[in-house]
Image 1 (tube, helix red, strand yellow):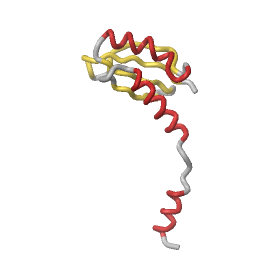
Image 2 (tube, one colour):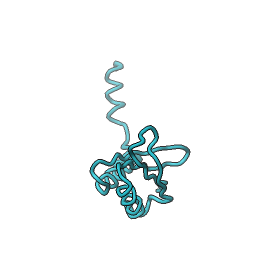
Image 3 (cartoon, helix red, strand yellow):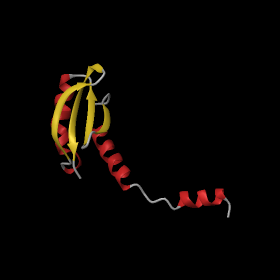
Amino acid sequence: MNAITTIAEFRQSMPACPISDELGSLHKAVEDACPPASIVSFVFDGRLRIAVDVHTFEEASEVEALLPAIGGGVFHDVARGNTPGMSFRRRVSALVDR
């Protein structure tokens, strides 16, 4: 058996990525619920957080109110602040629980 065959077999046997799939579905749900120009991302600093960057104070208030209702309540401890390196955006973030 040569190395190329071994690699092809290895790739075929890789398991599904349930964590990536779950994060992808949460990302999509938040993205769909937020204003169109929002930027949604995940941040890990010892705890997993979701960050939603918006343009206006009103959009930040809207996102702040809707995050706890998305995904069956997996988002909590919602906070608002400035987006690092982007003074014209506001960031709404929340901790993510399973």
